[in-house]
Image (tube, rainbow, N blue to C red):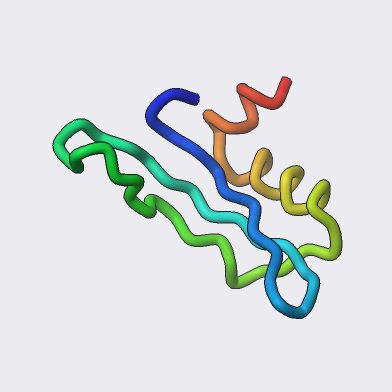
Length: 64
């Protein structure tokens, strides 16, 4: 989604989590953490994707 992204990460225990980032010109192209949803783990990557879509409106719109 251009200047925003959602990363799905797999933890050492095999569960999946997600984080939201943005990229702004004033940050010299670096990605900045917007929201950290990693306190809740999901059994599958698909479950983490579904949770991310439920939590992040712009991401939900891109998943349709």
